[in-house]
Length: 103
Image (cartoon, rainbow, N blue to C red; front, side):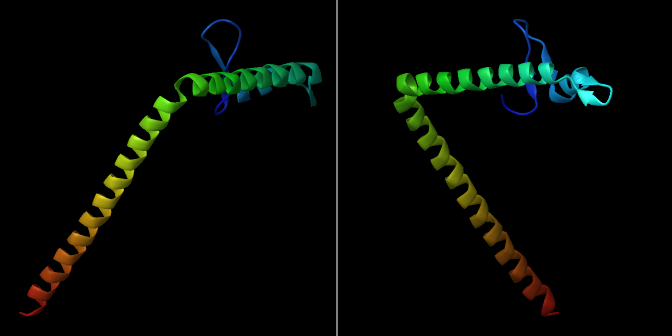
């Protein structure tokens, strides 16, 4: 699972890692069984996620590649325009500084 949160059980509730660690803490040491069960469940969810990604890629991969290409191209264009705009602003500021320095 991504981040530090993970769905627990069949409901929609979430348990964060810190909460799970607190539940597994038994005085001076962790409850090793609870820790291993937690890790196994987390591994199962990660494996399931990977399998879903592979399945989606086999079904929708070409379309998603096209979407990714479109979005990446747009993002790169946006960054290029932003850089060019910043350069034009710097040029304008330099020209203004020159004008005011002439006084």
